[in-house]
Image (cartoon, rainbow, N blue to C red; front, side):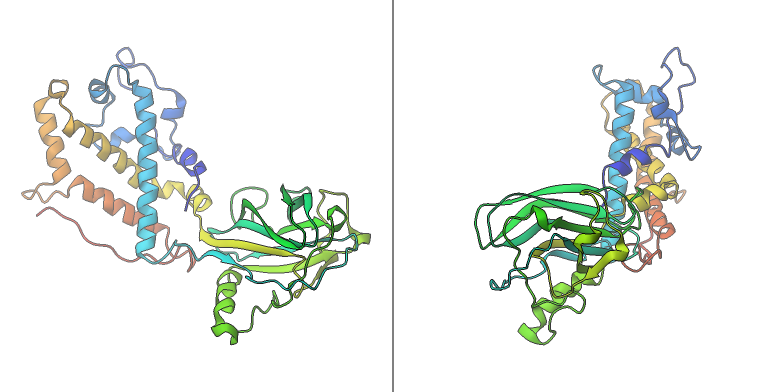
Length: 379
């Protein structure tokens, strides 16, 4: 549900403050001290101090390395908690999983090669966090294919975004190319909001492609045939990604690797040009979380503080921390019934739920309304 690049961006949200005595603990690099929120991890609990932390570390574990490690671990933990919260709210799960566009082939309809560029358009629904992942690209061809280049274009980029090499050894056979092709609607790059096109140049093709015309890519399958099984599977994908076969006439095909004029596209909803796809539709909130990373400030700060306090509680280096400080840490971790102080772990859960509420109701699919969670307190 998220990519690793979100971790890099979340590391900018809160920083570590230099120790008051830089002669005792040298100043930290800016990669650890930079803070977009203006907050520092030491502000989340008085015992989160660099001198306390350093006193508990093994001699071969550098303080700077530890600070970076614990921040990375906390970010991963926060994001996993966010994912779990969304799944409990029936959101963020796979919307369609490993669906085939079709599962049988008619072998008697070869397509005449006319020097066109042919392929399939993928028009993504404008849902924040929506991702289509093509796991395998299939082609049914009349001849073995030593090396056919497939081109992935985006309507916002002049040059091909990616290319893939398809090869097969058997004639009149169907062959899969196993490769993950990720199509995001919103990813913070130059393709954000664009339309995707995957296809090949017929002049590069050995032999011919086989047409599958039992599917109208615009209207889907017959809803009453085979109990509606194929219709249901196709629609589970098509409701999020409109897939439309098309061609560019030979007279309008530009230089290889350069996107065509989309006004020259001719849609052919009953001609797939041999293509089949194994495709999943998922929620991926990487860019959404990057764009809204400051809403995670409190939750992230508390998770880091909790992990430091737990380390101090479990440490056998009692002499490194004053006895009364360790007692206070245990009290803060477990809560206090006399003062009705909420346990620190419960404060973390509250902060995570509050973050989910801040980020809720963006859309009904990947970031829906959040439910009110359980209440926590000292008993």
